[in-house]
Image (cartoon, rainbow, N blue to C red; front, side):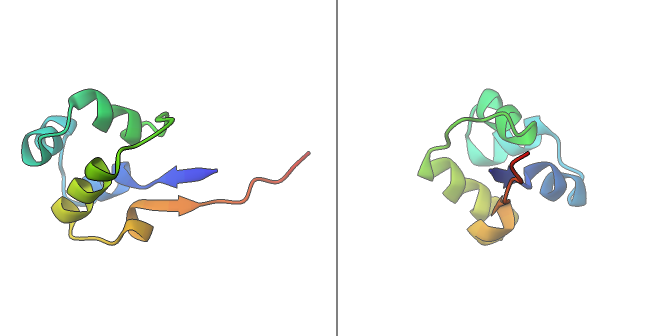
Length: 70
């Protein structure tokens, strides 16, 4: 499972979805899906824009988490 840390990064900088949309040019829908961790796919351009905005590496924005099978 891939975990997205966009909400954490936004919280640290006190940014809203509208702020991120304005700064990156990404749609509010794309940002909302990532914020809520409900996105099924993400364009590389979106990842690049978010990493540039938050001055972070990809591994700081996304993390692969092992899911235990029950």
